Image (spheres, rainbow, N blue to C red):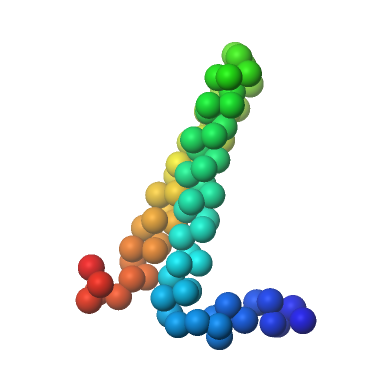
Length: 80
């Protein structure tokens, strides 16, 4: 059952499906980055709480950049 969960997405569709799956981590990082800052401002956080939120947002932004670069490098040259 575990093997089916791990390898089924690769068998299900073409290579295009696999490339689309690689964009999810980047989208999640972008969502975290944009949502956490807005939520902290709405809740009125200040001081140490806002510092932690800022650190998490920076880590999420760096993660989004890393995932975007990985997706760009993995893309075949003829698609660029």
